[in-house]
Image (cartoon, rainbow, N blue to C red):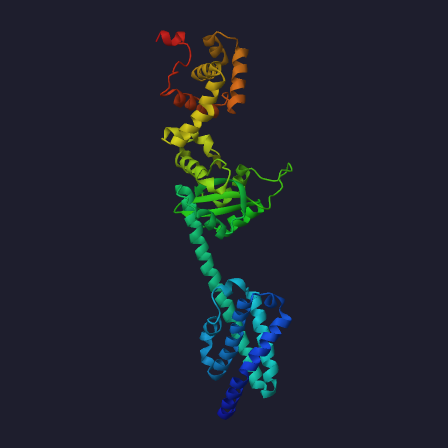
Length: 406
């Protein structure tokens, strides 16, 4: 407002503005209904709240016109009239539309009172727009902090296995878009951690993630999203190991361990326990790949005392072989004890080497591990040792001639 305006003119203008403020508010509400479809579709309670905001804006303008130094209080004056949930139901764009309609109506009513008043309205509307942006930015920041705390709580619940009946609702509050199978990925936190970049990469892979930072450890709960990505072979879902390989650059240096796949997010604790146990012992495998699956670290985990690894080895290797054929167990024991030599195994068992080959092939078909590879041989031998401990069937194979002489 020009500083040369007489005090009497300002006092008269203020009195006039107070008299017509009610009419301006009424016309503004009618204009909102006629020009903004989203306003007309609102429930009555929210329309009333928006009307209170418009009325508060007009009243606040009159106060500001009387004392322009009150600018810092604009946002509080206007938005204090609305319930908190209005900020969550009305977007910033809609708020700016509300401001524009209110300013247009006010300009039309006061246009004949001189350029100084029109200039004051334009200046005030600019301040209100900036104030609205600040209110929404603060709300978004607070919501982001709350989401981060809630996400950390959910990931911690999954890691500790202390999931309760509130876990599904907390996951839903985070906007989880995953469905079906889930796997947990554990690695190190990079010095400059870009959580947004990690989420963008996951979305491009058709995955959704929950992220937990626990000091130097970074944990991702990975699920496939509702909009899967087509793979090169035409499949609609990427394997979790492929997803982990694409997410690997987002982790710090060191080992990266992928837990086994579980049916649903509520079962993610099982995958997390395996991944954490594998991460703790990954350094003991000198040439461990990155990422490495937790089940590939079963021997190291079992030696470290992980009960889940011990049960997995016995249930997935020893017991199926024992149930299928005693010959397969005896052949596998002999083959591993004889340094994976077909000839030595054949001599010990008094069979042809081709028989040994056939039985080893059957072992691979029954349990999915191939004893001819050095790494898988370690897994199988560990499973045989664990399976034979504490059982009644400790006779692994006939005593060899070499050992009889020692």
